[in-house]
Image (tube, rainbow, N blue to C red; front, side, top):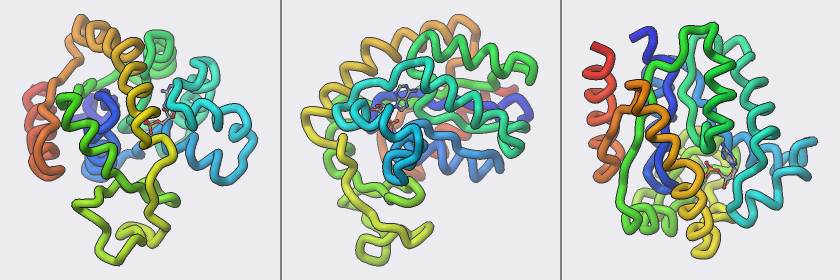
Length: 219
Ligand code: AMP
């Protein structure tokens, strides 16, 4: 599925984007580009970007478009992303979607935009129990912890609760999703790119559903 390797995952916080994007990227052997992970990593390492993005992350507000767009453009220009990518958490606003179109127009455009859909109640239940590896961003849940206490199965990093997985920040992030990101669904649907996937159930069930839906869409 040559077109399908340029995939975007959208869905509210807690829909399972991080988990499913990582699996999809491994399956298609393309990088998993997650803006949230990139920002958290910058803050943790005290990179140049840290000062600019920290306060947005802490309260659960969107980082300004021009900054996010710059970071993603640079990332998609790296050699490993030239033949494809799975984008997770970007675009989240109309200006971001338009910037993405401009960047990849020369590469043939997007293959598909997966909309992982879960009810708010499921999202809140997942987010409040979510734990994440500080080092590589792999997601866990208190009901599905890593094998070895709280060190990551993938890299051995420390597995912790995210600062923005508090009730207040979750509410703010879900509201931002409704206001800024839901309108993007129509933008992609009008171009025949949107693939709706039911995001409820286990990670294995959702992954199987998503791959089947992408296969159908690429025929
Ligand atoms: P996530 O891990 O995708 O939930 O992102 C965590 C936080 O990073 C968000 O609450 C925002 O503050 C910021 N962020 C990530 N991606 C974007 C984006 N595309 N646009 C604006 N802010 C973003």
